[in-house]
Image 1 (cartoon, rainbow, N blue to C red):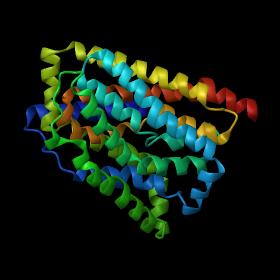
Image 2 (image 1 turned 60 degrees about the horizontal axis):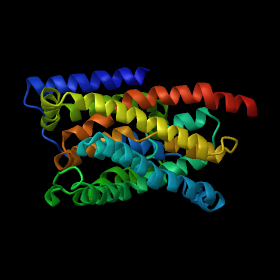
Image 3 (image 1 turned 135 degrees about the vertical axis):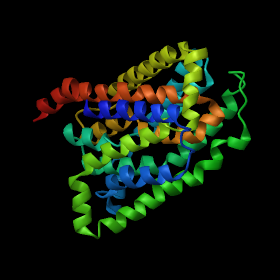
Image 4 (image 1 turned 180 degrees about the vertical axis):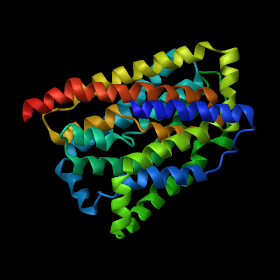
Amino acid sequence: MQLIVIVIIGAILGFLYGSYNYGFVFSSKICLFAGLTMIMPSLFKFKLHHISLVWEHKRTVIKGFIVNYLLLPLIAVGIGFATGDFGITAGLFLLATLSGGGMVMHWIKKSGADTSFGFLLLFANLVFVSLSLLMLHIFAQLSAPYFGATYDEEVAMSRYAWVVVELLIIIPFLASRVVIRIEPLMHFIDRYRKTISHLSIFVILFYLFGLQSSQQLVDIYDFEPELFGVALIATAGFYLLITLLSLYVYDMDSPQERAAFWHSVTRYITLALVLTTFSSRAFGVSMLLPVMFAYVIQIPLAVYLDRRHLGEETNGRS
């Protein structure tokens, strides 16, 4: 619950700062900051030999890929089309294609799942960020006419794919390989990882909600306030369906499938929020709404699943 408080305070203070000042102008440096403070520390324990686990547990890998990159996007599209809003649908779709997240390894460890396999999935899903952007681009091209919207090729998501891959994948991975060779620095970051993560989330949210473009949320509230309720219901419905699907698909008796389960029920929300700064020009600022509400839904949901369901499963096996 501490993280929820940080999220709310960071978003509110950032939005207020943008309201009473001129707001920030977006810079891709925030992506580099997110990559180094949130993604890089999660890669310390990833070793290249973990790649062999792909073949060893190929059935689970294939199952997770189908769930995360086919079934979840279909659920997002189905719910999004029902809302009738292009931005909300795009926000749900982006969440659906970004697996895992900053806290996914916490839940994997806590539930007694396979951490080595979990780190492999974390790295693989980061590599697939470029696929997520490609899927969002294709989705926009195909669905824009349905919503009576125009997808401007000048701000198309495909233009930002390399920037995202460079700042959020390549540089953090290379930096992690350097840091693990400097043991005192690695141990320091590991020791204060939770604090660093919370501070970086606060900074990222303060910055993103302080952007000039984020002030357009006021326009939505003034002219289409019902979209806030629509987005909340749509996001809650999305999480309900993906949780039920994941509980049905994955075998909770398998430590590897339990790790894959967490990579399906948790979405990389902060990364999604960073990427919406590239995307909102193409989809509309309402794209922010599902990502915003995902914070207040996903964190309590993960706590509930760990305590009420996976906790009981783990105790039963011990």
